Image (cartoon, rainbow, N blue to C red; front, side, top):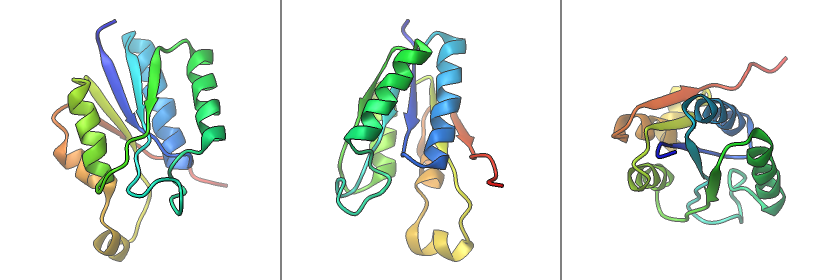
Length: 134
């Protein structure tokens, strides 16, 4: 099993959609999974950074699915760069990310991690949306 799939994960609907897709790809490709849950400032004030309970659930999910993998939680100035660096280091065959709807103004003011990952990745990227609520 030499193939690695990297997934940018956050404990929210887009992150869960990305994890679901990455797990399916890992099963189909008989690949290992590298789950990257990155943050600019750590758990304080960042609801996309997985807490201990989220990490335990994530580890259980990997084990239940029979997918070999590990979870990394890097911290740095730019989340997109952290995800891209992890994919490059792992020589990823695929990078999976979740996307969310944002207004044009929201993207302009806050930037878009997903967009920067899509444009900056050296490997193929699978972008998935969570199911519509309702």
